[in-house]
Amino acid sequence: KNEVEQSPQNLTAQEGEFITINCSYSVGISALHWLQQHPGGGIVSLFMLSSGKKKHGRLIATINIQEKHSSLHITASHPRDSAVYICAVRGTGNQFYFGTGTSLTVIP
Amino acid sequence: GAVVSQHPSRVICKSGTSVKIECRSLDFQATTMFWYRQFPKQSLMLMATSNEGSKATYEQGVEKDKFLINHASLTLSTLTVTSAHPEDSSFYICSAIRSPTYEQYFGPGTRLTVT
Image (cartoon, rainbow over all chains, first blue to last red; front, side):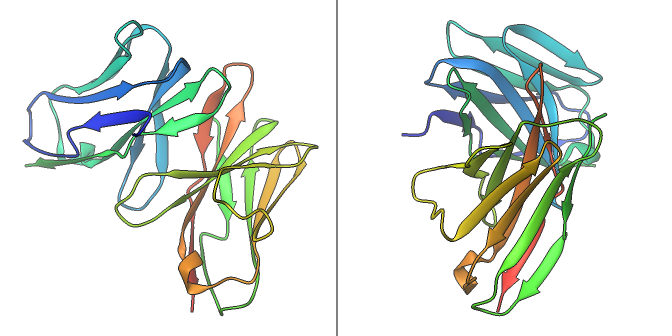
């Protein structure tokens, strides 16, 4: 069983749609990261959060520590948002666990 | 923002040779760096945790004698794939941890092809 589960695995949306990607985890954590990986392979850390909610532009990340769940929302999606989004958690022992990623395609 | 570089970005080598990949944090000191590998259409797999001044900690199933990690300074960690075989062909990514916030910054990755 994976310590971090993401859903959906694949997601196709029309430009402008509101998108949600979910992440559930089973370990105690110090922080949760949302990462974005573009087709070229480069990875960008979008958010690091340990409670509540963070917003950056059209991206919003929320976390519910009690439910061990986080969501990444993209408002007014755009084709340039097409990427793989990975949820990663840092455990209380500073080890990292990664979800399998959500492949998002936004169609113009 | 913080930048992490990797060198080389791509490397092709013959089976049996060794390849060194460098990971540098360019504008901050990183006592901890991570090395990952990624197979096509799969997520990141943590290989090892590299700590400056001490031996790396390897994940279960990762051969420490095959994947040599040296964290020589607060801005440089190297991964050497020894006696490479075609099955070692993969995308290798490093990340560096910035204290005290523990934010993680990723390198652009190195694509290794062993022929």
